[in-house]
Length: 234
Ligand code: NDP
Image (cartoon, helix red, strand yellow):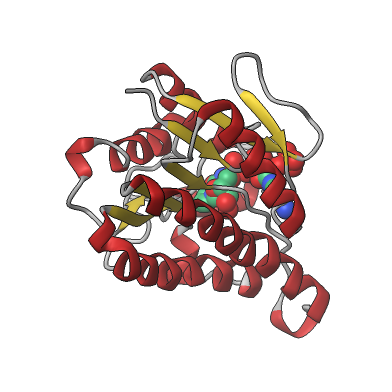
């Protein structure tokens, strides 16, 4: 049966490829956006995950159209890099608010639907940097590491109801986010990746879709790297 799938930040980048992967598999897919609208064929709901009221309204809209959310992909995220000594409270908090607190908000709302369904899959998009750290990314790395503790706590709280919570930790993926890197920085990063290339968004989407499949029913609280070997050992 077609499941109700919600991908936050599914209007572009990795999220959009994830949304399309579920759609191609026959699921009913909704994506959040912050004003851009949704690409053809996907149900777009306006939602800034930093606003609890928008999160509530977005879920109501999705569930009126597609039924209770059974698969949640918490993908929306931002970077705002800077070295620790120059990182202001606002810069730190803004990234935590979008990446970590935003994920808590959508997970909490999704959990109430999944508990009623007595099944569900939550997948949080973290980053290799959450475990390895990244110079200039104290805020981003903290937010992405936080997702691991959150997902594992949810896995423990809701596992007995057939709800799983897992984390996907991509390395460098070709999207708008990585287009911002300078050519020198890109070359430096490539030198550290055993597979010597960035990932395509499809390579992250395939892992996410698999985690939501029957084949992955016994996997919960896991952190799956999709990083070309960059974070090996974590
Ligand atoms: P993009 O910058 O291409 O897209 C980010 C998405 O998040 C957009 O859809 C954006 O919406 C949405 N978003 C940002 N802030 C909010 C918010 N407050 N509320 C709702 N939506 C929001 O990023 P990527 O596709 O590259 O990244 C997707 C996820 O993958 C992120 O969590 C990122 O941290 C993670 N990641 C990315 C890597 C990479 O190399 N690209 C590597 C590892 C992890 P809008 O269009 O409205 O701006």
